[in-house]
Length: 589
Image (cartoon, rainbow, N blue to C red; front, side, top):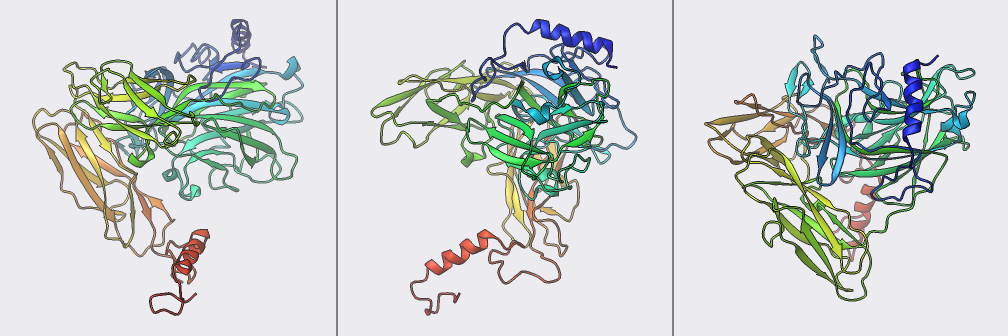
């Protein structure tokens, strides 16, 4: 039997839904609207584990340790309703990676929304077989887009990673988003679960240097618990800039091809051609007292930390193919400067935007960008609009704008503004959010240009920049390798600040003789003399140069311990570069 209070809340929720939800930034809502949509506006704790978030979610599980507090208050971690630019969103953080003695923390956060029975038939529960469509807009949380607490990691508190920390598929396919159905009803004695999560390449060696949206592994055609990271065949849709917003549209249905138990089709960021993945459904009994299909959301694993943001999360019964919102132009943070969110600092660093049309205007055209406030300057004065000119010759060539923060004297903490754009030819341009770091409040910001990557045996170092926004007296920051002092060599002296400004950290890979996963990762932690200031950590990528007892294969031309298409490309490139293979400076192939 289900909890009676949960049943009551479920039917009350149905009564409250008078109009279908119409979320979506890059995709149109399905015909008739979404059956249900959580819009990221509410973070209520509810009562007794029920009535959470917008009043329709449950977080009463065997392991959920959320005390109802937002991030940055009471115990570390939590759930917060935040805003940035024109987006209201939910932020969830579990800081509890590993902490001997189990110090109090808001950990193992997990929420469920009860979908109910298909066609009100309590004997029909297999929505994951007959088909369901999900859509959500999400990103990894960072200190530059809202509050985050330190990680409780290996018995110590360390700064939250610069680019965020995702959540691998763990503990019987639990992830950040998912659908669970078949609750404890014969002939299916246990619930079945398919989940999705954003993860960075550094989360787990099972990713083999890839980052993106992961889901249940492919582990046969029978439901099993063995679908987590490191089990079966990895299923991932690769995505860049995981700390920027990404919109997903996902369909799930039974797989009749023999390639798994279910077929998942993932559409992302306005694309209308999906990527198909064959997955194996998991068996799980979380939320055992809800015996129908439920949406799930969170990070319920023990000793697995992470943080992510949710703009919206919606579902519709059945398989629905998406249609994209036609966009006149795209405004984004360029990949060339590291991508990610657009962030500027009062009296400090700037950032850039790229603007490009999405179709040929057939003649002269303009895009007018207007800041939502005088907090930012697009090169035309604080708060003033900027006009870009396009024509049939340059419409698909991105134009770059430098964004500067208005250096006011008001203490605002981290705040934001929007860049709103209009096109002379009409149409939609999505507003772009700019995050502004305040210099009236002491904080530390770390900036990387294109990630941090070094290679064993390579003397060329990599760098990142540490900014202090405000100093009262002398502030000293000392970087160190938190995981293994034999992974990277930090050649910078301790960073000493007597005023606001920036310092550069330089490091290179330690050239050991140990064969490690290629690539592998470590964590650079920062000790600071002012304990109240949170300094983010950095997770460098380390490329391996040892290939075991047999050394490099003769066919491994780029010496990366793998023989693959890149080696073939190098072979072909060298061959084409030689007009006469008999010349002394040509390699014989």
